[in-house]
Length: 251
Length: 216
Image (cartoon, rainbow over all chains, first blue to last red):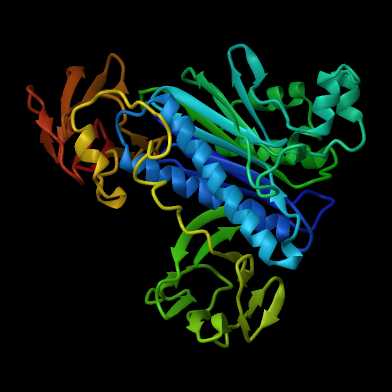
Protein backbone atom coordinates (compact mmCIF):
# COMPACT_ATOMS: atom_id res chain seq x y z
CA UNK A 1 0.00 0.00 0.00
CA UNK A 2 1.38 3.39 -0.94
CA UNK A 3 -0.66 5.98 0.85
CA UNK A 4 0.25 9.54 0.09
CA UNK A 5 -0.62 12.65 2.06
CA UNK A 6 -0.49 16.28 1.03
CA UNK A 7 -1.74 19.51 2.57
CA UNK A 8 -1.89 23.25 2.02
CA UNK A 9 -3.06 26.24 4.03
CA UNK A 10 -3.68 29.84 3.09
CA UNK A 11 -4.90 32.85 5.06
CA UNK A 12 -7.27 33.74 2.21
CA UNK A 13 -7.74 37.15 0.66
CA UNK A 14 -9.79 38.85 3.38
CA UNK A 15 -7.93 37.87 6.55
CA UNK A 16 -4.45 38.53 7.76
CA UNK A 17 -4.20 35.80 10.37
CA UNK A 18 -4.30 32.12 9.62
CA UNK A 19 -6.27 30.34 12.31
CA UNK A 20 -6.38 27.01 10.50
CA UNK A 21 -3.84 24.32 11.32
CA UNK A 22 -2.85 20.92 9.97
CA UNK A 23 -0.77 18.07 11.38
CA UNK A 24 0.11 14.93 9.41
CA UNK A 25 2.11 11.82 10.26
CA UNK A 26 2.18 9.78 7.07
CA UNK A 27 4.05 6.90 8.70
CA UNK A 28 1.34 6.45 11.28
CA UNK A 29 -1.47 7.23 8.81
CA UNK A 30 -2.73 10.19 10.82
CA UNK A 31 -3.98 13.58 9.61
CA UNK A 32 -5.65 16.32 11.65
CA UNK A 33 -7.10 19.62 10.41
CA UNK A 34 -8.53 22.33 12.66
CA UNK A 35 -10.14 25.74 12.21
CA UNK A 36 -9.73 27.85 15.32
CA UNK A 37 -11.81 30.72 16.63
CA UNK A 38 -11.20 33.39 19.24
CA UNK A 39 -9.74 36.87 19.59
CA UNK A 40 -6.07 37.92 19.33
CA UNK A 41 -4.13 34.84 18.39
CA UNK A 42 -6.42 32.57 20.41
CA UNK A 43 -7.93 30.87 17.38
CA UNK A 44 -4.49 29.90 16.21
CA UNK A 45 -3.57 28.68 19.69
CA UNK A 46 -6.63 26.45 19.79
CA UNK A 47 -6.21 24.98 16.30
CA UNK A 48 -2.47 24.32 16.66
CA UNK A 49 -3.00 22.71 20.08
CA UNK A 50 -5.78 20.51 18.74
CA UNK A 51 -3.71 19.35 15.76
CA UNK A 52 -0.57 18.75 17.79
CA UNK A 53 -2.25 16.90 20.65
CA UNK A 54 -4.55 14.70 18.59
CA UNK A 55 -1.81 13.84 16.11
CA UNK A 56 0.76 13.06 18.76
CA UNK A 57 -1.65 11.00 20.84
CA UNK A 58 -2.61 8.91 17.81
CA UNK A 59 0.98 8.45 16.66
CA UNK A 60 2.03 7.24 20.12
CA UNK A 61 -0.95 4.97 20.32
CA UNK A 62 -0.18 3.61 16.88
CA UNK A 63 3.44 2.90 17.81
CA UNK A 64 2.28 0.97 20.83
CA UNK A 65 -0.10 -1.08 18.69
CA UNK A 66 1.47 -1.36 15.26
CA UNK A 67 -0.23 -4.49 14.06
CA UNK A 68 -3.62 -5.69 15.08
CA UNK A 69 -5.91 -2.76 15.66
CA UNK A 70 -9.66 -3.17 15.75
CA UNK A 71 -11.64 -0.29 14.32
CA UNK A 72 -13.49 0.09 17.60
CA UNK A 73 -10.22 0.48 19.50
CA UNK A 74 -8.92 2.94 16.92
CA UNK A 75 -12.08 5.05 17.09
CA UNK A 76 -11.80 5.10 20.87
CA UNK A 77 -8.20 6.25 20.64
CA UNK A 78 -9.33 9.01 18.31
CA UNK A 79 -12.06 10.10 20.72
CA UNK A 80 -9.58 10.07 23.62
CA UNK A 81 -7.16 12.24 21.64
CA UNK A 82 -9.88 14.78 20.93
CA UNK A 83 -11.00 14.71 24.58
CA UNK A 84 -7.39 15.32 25.62
CA UNK A 85 -7.14 18.31 23.25
CA UNK A 86 -10.49 19.58 24.52
CA UNK A 87 -9.25 19.54 28.11
CA UNK A 88 -5.92 21.18 27.27
CA UNK A 89 -7.49 23.98 25.22
CA UNK A 90 -10.16 24.58 27.84
CA UNK A 91 -7.51 24.77 30.60
CA UNK A 92 -5.56 27.36 28.63
CA UNK A 93 -8.74 29.32 27.86
CA UNK A 94 -9.69 29.38 31.55
CA UNK A 95 -6.27 30.55 32.75
CA UNK A 96 -5.69 33.25 30.10
CA UNK A 97 -8.16 36.11 29.80
CA UNK A 98 -7.22 36.83 26.19
CA UNK A 99 -7.81 33.18 25.32
CA UNK A 100 -11.25 33.07 26.93
CA UNK A 101 -13.86 31.57 24.67
CA UNK A 102 -11.39 30.17 22.19
CA UNK A 103 -12.20 26.90 20.52
CA UNK A 104 -11.66 24.99 17.35
CA UNK A 105 -13.23 22.59 14.93
CA UNK A 106 -11.36 19.41 14.24
CA UNK A 107 -11.49 16.70 11.60
CA UNK A 108 -9.29 13.65 12.18
CA UNK A 109 -8.31 10.90 9.75
CA UNK A 110 -6.71 7.61 10.80
CA UNK A 111 -5.76 4.81 8.42
CA UNK A 112 -6.26 1.34 9.87
CA UNK A 113 -5.37 -1.39 7.38
CA UNK A 114 -7.53 -0.83 4.33
CA UNK A 115 -10.04 1.28 6.24
CA UNK A 116 -10.06 5.04 6.69
CA UNK A 117 -11.54 6.28 9.96
CA UNK A 118 -12.80 9.84 10.23
CA UNK A 119 -13.96 11.83 13.25
CA UNK A 120 -15.08 15.43 13.39
CA UNK A 121 -16.36 18.24 15.59
CA UNK A 122 -17.75 21.44 14.07
CA UNK A 123 -17.94 22.48 10.43
CA UNK A 124 -14.65 21.22 9.05
CA UNK A 125 -15.47 18.43 6.64
CA UNK A 126 -14.33 15.19 5.10
CA UNK A 127 -15.16 14.13 1.54
CA UNK A 128 -14.40 11.07 -0.53
CA UNK A 129 -13.73 11.44 -4.24
CA UNK A 130 -13.81 8.21 -6.23
CA UNK A 131 -15.42 6.48 -9.15
CA UNK A 132 -18.85 7.63 -7.96
CA UNK A 133 -17.79 11.24 -7.76
CA UNK A 134 -17.62 13.44 -4.71
CA UNK A 135 -19.32 12.22 -1.56
CA UNK A 136 -19.54 14.25 1.61
CA UNK A 137 -18.76 12.08 4.62
CA UNK A 138 -19.45 14.43 7.53
CA UNK A 139 -22.43 16.44 8.68
CA UNK A 140 -21.58 19.90 10.01
CA UNK A 141 -22.25 20.69 13.64
CA UNK A 142 -23.57 24.12 12.70
CA UNK A 143 -26.64 26.22 13.22
CA UNK A 144 -27.18 26.14 9.49
CA UNK A 145 -27.09 22.35 9.23
CA UNK A 146 -29.59 22.15 12.09
CA UNK A 147 -31.89 24.48 10.18
CA UNK A 148 -31.53 22.37 7.06
CA UNK A 149 -32.24 19.22 9.07
CA UNK A 150 -35.33 20.85 10.57
CA UNK A 151 -36.61 21.69 7.09
CA UNK A 152 -36.32 25.44 7.64
CA UNK A 153 -33.84 25.87 4.80
CA UNK A 154 -33.11 23.98 1.62
CA UNK A 155 -29.48 23.01 1.00
CA UNK A 156 -29.48 25.53 -1.85
CA UNK A 157 -30.65 28.33 0.47
CA UNK A 158 -28.11 27.22 3.05
CA UNK A 159 -25.26 27.69 0.58
CA UNK A 160 -25.89 31.43 0.46
CA UNK A 161 -27.37 32.06 3.91
CA UNK A 162 -25.69 34.60 6.18
CA UNK A 163 -24.13 33.42 9.44
CA UNK A 164 -22.97 30.23 7.83
CA UNK A 165 -20.13 29.87 10.27
CA UNK A 166 -21.86 29.45 13.63
CA UNK A 167 -20.86 26.06 14.96
CA UNK A 168 -22.93 24.20 17.52
CA UNK A 169 -20.09 21.95 18.64
CA UNK A 170 -16.43 22.81 19.13
CA UNK A 171 -13.28 21.56 20.85
CA UNK A 172 -12.15 23.47 23.94
CA UNK A 173 -15.32 25.35 24.85
CA UNK A 174 -16.83 23.09 27.50
CA UNK A 175 -15.91 20.19 29.75
CA UNK A 176 -16.94 17.47 27.34
CA UNK A 177 -16.87 17.11 23.60
CA UNK A 178 -18.65 14.63 21.40
CA UNK A 179 -16.83 13.33 18.34
CA UNK A 180 -18.83 11.93 15.42
CA UNK A 181 -16.99 9.08 13.77
CA UNK A 182 -17.29 6.89 10.71
CA UNK A 183 -15.28 4.18 8.95
CA UNK A 184 -15.04 3.76 5.24
CA UNK A 185 -13.42 1.26 2.94
CA UNK A 186 -11.42 3.42 0.57
CA UNK A 187 -10.57 1.87 -2.79
CA UNK A 188 -7.14 2.37 -4.33
CA UNK A 189 -7.23 5.67 -6.18
CA UNK A 190 -9.93 7.18 -3.97
CA UNK A 191 -9.03 10.57 -2.59
CA UNK A 192 -10.13 11.59 0.88
CA UNK A 193 -10.30 15.36 1.41
CA UNK A 194 -10.31 17.13 4.77
CA UNK A 195 -11.01 20.86 4.61
CA UNK A 196 -12.05 23.91 6.56
CA UNK A 197 -15.15 25.92 5.70
CA UNK A 198 -12.91 28.43 3.91
CA UNK A 199 -12.95 25.93 1.04
CA UNK A 200 -16.56 24.81 1.11
CA UNK A 201 -18.01 28.31 1.58
CA UNK A 202 -16.23 29.38 -1.60
CA UNK A 203 -16.59 26.29 -3.78
CA UNK A 204 -19.54 24.04 -4.48
CA UNK A 205 -19.30 20.26 -4.66
CA UNK A 206 -19.16 20.33 -8.47
CA UNK A 207 -16.23 22.73 -8.46
CA UNK A 208 -14.34 20.68 -5.88
CA UNK A 209 -15.04 17.49 -7.85
CA UNK A 210 -13.87 19.09 -11.10
CA UNK A 211 -10.55 20.02 -9.50
CA UNK A 212 -10.04 16.60 -7.91
CA UNK A 213 -10.74 14.99 -11.30
CA UNK A 214 -7.78 16.77 -12.90
CA UNK A 215 -4.66 14.71 -13.42
CA UNK A 216 -2.24 16.16 -10.94
CA UNK A 217 -0.11 15.24 -7.97
CA UNK A 218 -1.82 15.40 -4.59
CA UNK A 219 0.22 18.47 -3.71
CA UNK A 220 -0.78 20.03 -7.03
CA UNK A 221 -4.45 19.33 -6.27
CA UNK A 222 -4.07 21.01 -2.86
CA UNK A 223 -2.67 24.12 -4.53
CA UNK A 224 -5.48 24.16 -7.10
CA UNK A 225 -8.13 23.94 -4.38
CA UNK A 226 -6.56 26.85 -2.48
CA UNK A 227 -6.22 28.91 -5.67
CA UNK A 228 -9.84 28.27 -6.63
CA UNK A 229 -11.12 29.25 -3.16
CA UNK A 230 -9.12 32.48 -3.34
CA UNK A 231 -10.29 33.16 -6.89
CA UNK A 232 -13.88 32.76 -5.67
CA UNK A 233 -13.35 35.41 -3.02
CA UNK A 234 -11.09 33.85 -0.40
CA UNK A 235 -13.28 35.20 2.39
CA UNK A 236 -11.74 32.98 5.07
CA UNK A 237 -8.65 30.94 5.87
CA UNK A 238 -8.50 27.85 3.66
CA UNK A 239 -6.88 24.55 4.58
CA UNK A 240 -6.97 21.19 2.85
CA UNK A 241 -5.52 17.73 3.42
CA UNK A 242 -5.63 15.11 0.69
CA UNK A 243 -4.77 11.44 0.96
CA UNK A 244 -4.84 8.69 -1.62
CA UNK A 245 -3.94 5.01 -1.63
CA UNK A 246 -2.25 4.40 -4.95
CA UNK A 247 -2.22 0.64 -4.58
CA UNK A 248 0.78 -1.63 -4.35
CA UNK A 249 2.53 -1.02 -7.59
CA UNK A 250 5.34 1.43 -7.93
CA UNK A 251 5.75 1.82 -11.67
CA UNK B 1 5.64 22.47 29.20
CA UNK B 2 6.23 21.79 25.54
CA UNK B 3 6.76 23.82 22.41
CA UNK B 4 4.61 23.00 19.38
CA UNK B 5 6.50 24.16 16.29
CA UNK B 6 4.49 25.18 13.24
CA UNK B 7 5.11 26.92 9.94
CA UNK B 8 2.19 28.67 8.25
CA UNK B 9 -0.27 26.49 10.16
CA UNK B 10 1.48 23.18 9.51
CA UNK B 11 2.41 21.51 12.76
CA UNK B 12 5.95 20.23 12.30
CA UNK B 13 7.15 18.99 15.65
CA UNK B 14 6.77 19.06 19.40
CA UNK B 15 9.62 19.51 21.81
CA UNK B 16 9.40 19.00 25.58
CA UNK B 17 11.05 21.78 27.60
CA UNK B 18 12.89 19.43 29.92
CA UNK B 19 16.21 21.27 30.15
CA UNK B 20 16.99 24.38 32.25
CA UNK B 21 17.84 26.16 29.00
CA UNK B 22 16.57 25.21 25.53
CA UNK B 23 18.28 26.99 22.64
CA UNK B 24 16.71 27.73 19.29
CA UNK B 25 18.66 28.53 16.13
CA UNK B 26 19.93 27.56 12.72
CA UNK B 27 23.16 25.90 13.82
CA UNK B 28 23.21 22.19 14.48
CA UNK B 29 24.24 22.41 18.13
CA UNK B 30 20.99 24.11 19.20
CA UNK B 31 18.41 22.08 21.09
CA UNK B 32 15.81 23.12 18.53
CA UNK B 33 17.41 23.42 15.11
CA UNK B 34 15.48 25.47 12.55
CA UNK B 35 17.55 25.48 9.39
CA UNK B 36 15.77 28.24 7.56
CA UNK B 37 16.48 31.70 6.21
CA UNK B 38 15.41 34.32 8.69
CA UNK B 39 16.56 32.27 11.67
CA UNK B 40 19.89 33.26 13.21
CA UNK B 41 22.58 30.73 14.10
CA UNK B 42 21.81 31.31 17.77
CA UNK B 43 18.40 32.93 17.72
CA UNK B 44 16.67 32.55 21.07
CA UNK B 45 16.60 30.52 24.27
CA UNK B 46 13.79 29.35 26.52
CA UNK B 47 14.93 29.35 30.14
CA UNK B 48 13.40 27.88 33.29
CA UNK B 49 13.71 30.82 35.65
CA UNK B 50 12.53 31.18 39.26
CA UNK B 51 9.68 33.36 37.93
CA UNK B 52 8.73 30.70 35.40
CA UNK B 53 9.43 29.99 31.77
CA UNK B 54 11.16 32.85 29.97
CA UNK B 55 12.17 33.41 26.36
CA UNK B 56 15.30 35.43 25.57
CA UNK B 57 16.29 36.82 22.21
CA UNK B 58 19.99 36.15 21.57
CA UNK B 59 20.54 39.32 19.55
CA UNK B 60 19.10 37.64 16.51
CA UNK B 61 19.05 39.48 13.19
CA UNK B 62 15.31 39.29 12.68
CA UNK B 63 14.15 39.33 16.27
CA UNK B 64 12.12 37.11 18.56
CA UNK B 65 8.41 37.74 18.99
CA UNK B 66 5.83 36.76 21.58
CA UNK B 67 2.27 37.03 20.34
CA UNK B 68 3.52 39.23 17.48
CA UNK B 69 5.33 41.70 19.79
CA UNK B 70 9.11 41.93 19.46
CA UNK B 71 10.74 41.05 22.80
CA UNK B 72 14.23 40.93 24.28
CA UNK B 73 13.02 38.72 27.05
CA UNK B 74 9.58 37.81 28.23
CA UNK B 75 7.94 35.44 30.70
CA UNK B 76 5.86 32.82 28.96
CA UNK B 77 2.50 31.30 29.72
CA UNK B 78 0.66 28.44 28.06
CA UNK B 79 -0.91 29.72 24.88
CA UNK B 80 1.89 32.16 24.10
CA UNK B 81 3.22 31.92 20.57
CA UNK B 82 6.94 32.59 20.12
CA UNK B 83 7.78 33.87 16.63
CA UNK B 84 11.17 32.99 15.16
CA UNK B 85 11.44 33.81 11.46
CA UNK B 86 8.26 32.48 9.91
CA UNK B 87 8.03 29.74 12.52
CA UNK B 88 5.68 29.69 15.49
CA UNK B 89 6.55 27.93 18.70
CA UNK B 90 3.42 27.57 20.78
CA UNK B 91 3.81 27.12 24.52
CA UNK B 92 1.56 24.24 25.54
CA UNK B 93 1.15 22.74 28.97
CA UNK B 94 -0.69 19.69 27.72
CA UNK B 95 1.35 16.73 28.81
CA UNK B 96 0.15 13.50 27.32
CA UNK B 97 -2.53 12.34 29.71
CA UNK B 98 -1.44 9.45 31.90
CA UNK B 99 -2.42 6.06 30.66
CA UNK B 100 -3.76 7.35 27.39
CA UNK B 101 -0.90 6.57 25.12
CA UNK B 102 0.55 3.17 25.60
CA UNK B 103 -2.64 1.32 26.40
CA UNK B 104 -5.40 1.87 23.92
CA UNK B 105 -8.10 0.27 26.03
CA UNK B 106 -7.14 1.38 29.52
CA UNK B 107 -10.43 3.16 30.11
CA UNK B 108 -12.81 1.50 27.73
CA UNK B 109 -14.27 -1.92 27.19
CA UNK B 110 -12.40 -2.45 23.95
CA UNK B 111 -11.75 -5.97 22.82
CA UNK B 112 -8.62 -6.30 20.79
CA UNK B 113 -8.46 -9.19 18.38
CA UNK B 114 -6.62 -12.13 19.89
CA UNK B 115 -3.15 -12.03 18.44
CA UNK B 116 0.17 -13.56 19.34
CA UNK B 117 2.23 -11.25 21.48
CA UNK B 118 -0.62 -9.03 22.54
CA UNK B 119 -0.21 -9.60 26.29
CA UNK B 120 3.50 -8.79 26.09
CA UNK B 121 2.74 -5.64 24.21
CA UNK B 122 0.42 -4.42 26.90
CA UNK B 123 3.43 -3.97 29.16
CA UNK B 124 5.65 -2.42 26.55
CA UNK B 125 6.78 1.15 26.71
CA UNK B 126 5.27 3.11 23.84
CA UNK B 127 8.63 4.37 22.69
CA UNK B 128 10.30 0.99 22.93
CA UNK B 129 7.95 -0.64 20.46
CA UNK B 130 9.36 -0.88 16.95
CA UNK B 131 7.69 1.18 14.27
CA UNK B 132 6.27 -0.61 11.26
CA UNK B 133 8.85 -1.18 8.56
CA UNK B 134 8.92 1.15 5.60
CA UNK B 135 10.12 1.00 2.02
CA UNK B 136 11.41 4.26 0.63
CA UNK B 137 11.52 4.76 -3.12
CA UNK B 138 14.82 6.38 -4.10
CA UNK B 139 14.49 6.83 -7.89
CA UNK B 140 11.96 7.40 -10.62
CA UNK B 141 8.62 9.16 -10.69
CA UNK B 142 7.75 8.00 -7.18
CA UNK B 143 11.10 9.02 -5.65
CA UNK B 144 10.73 10.05 -2.05
CA UNK B 145 7.57 8.10 -1.51
CA UNK B 146 7.46 5.91 1.57
CA UNK B 147 5.37 2.78 1.68
CA UNK B 148 4.37 1.54 5.09
CA UNK B 149 4.52 -2.26 5.28
CA UNK B 150 1.31 -2.72 7.21
CA UNK B 151 0.07 -5.67 5.20
CA UNK B 152 1.19 -9.28 5.32
CA UNK B 153 2.39 -8.96 1.74
CA UNK B 154 3.23 -5.85 -0.25
CA UNK B 155 4.26 -5.94 -3.91
CA UNK B 156 6.41 -3.58 -5.93
CA UNK B 157 7.39 -3.35 -9.59
CA UNK B 158 5.93 -3.42 -13.06
CA UNK B 159 3.40 -6.19 -13.73
CA UNK B 160 4.59 -8.54 -16.44
CA UNK B 161 8.12 -7.21 -16.26
CA UNK B 162 9.45 -7.42 -12.73
CA UNK B 163 7.47 -7.72 -9.52
CA UNK B 164 8.81 -8.45 -6.04
CA UNK B 165 6.92 -9.07 -2.84
CA UNK B 166 7.84 -8.27 0.73
CA UNK B 167 6.17 -10.63 3.18
CA UNK B 168 6.07 -10.32 6.90
CA UNK B 169 7.11 -13.43 8.76
CA UNK B 170 6.79 -12.70 12.45
CA UNK B 171 9.21 -9.87 13.18
CA UNK B 172 11.13 -10.46 9.92
CA UNK B 173 10.48 -9.28 6.37
CA UNK B 174 11.33 -11.51 3.43
CA UNK B 175 11.85 -10.30 -0.13
CA UNK B 176 11.09 -12.58 -3.06
CA UNK B 177 10.58 -12.21 -6.78
CA UNK B 178 7.13 -13.13 -8.04
CA UNK B 179 7.25 -12.08 -11.69
CA UNK B 180 9.74 -11.35 -14.46
CA UNK B 181 12.77 -12.80 -16.20
CA UNK B 182 15.14 -10.08 -15.06
CA UNK B 183 16.25 -10.66 -11.48
CA UNK B 184 15.80 -7.98 -8.88
CA UNK B 185 19.03 -7.17 -7.06
CA UNK B 186 19.49 -6.97 -3.30
CA UNK B 187 22.44 -4.83 -2.19
CA UNK B 188 23.98 -5.22 -5.64
CA UNK B 189 23.68 -9.02 -5.92
CA UNK B 190 20.96 -10.91 -7.80
CA UNK B 191 18.11 -11.87 -5.49
CA UNK B 192 18.22 -15.65 -4.81
CA UNK B 193 15.27 -17.64 -6.15
CA UNK B 194 14.27 -18.61 -2.62
CA UNK B 195 14.15 -14.97 -1.58
CA UNK B 196 16.10 -13.30 1.20
CA UNK B 197 15.39 -11.66 4.55
CA UNK B 198 15.58 -7.86 4.62
CA UNK B 199 17.59 -5.79 7.06
CA UNK B 200 17.52 -2.14 7.94
CA UNK B 201 19.03 -0.07 5.13
CA UNK B 202 18.96 -2.84 2.49
CA UNK B 203 18.77 -1.61 -1.09
CA UNK B 204 16.52 -3.38 -3.58
CA UNK B 205 17.15 -2.60 -7.25
CA UNK B 206 14.27 -3.11 -9.70
CA UNK B 207 15.85 -2.43 -13.08
CA UNK B 208 17.36 0.86 -11.96
CA UNK B 209 14.58 1.89 -9.56
CA UNK B 210 15.98 1.52 -6.08
CA UNK B 211 13.96 0.88 -2.96
CA UNK B 212 15.39 1.10 0.52
CA UNK B 213 14.08 -1.04 3.34
CA UNK B 214 13.91 0.72 6.68
CA UNK B 215 13.08 -1.14 9.86
CA UNK B 216 13.91 -4.48 11.30
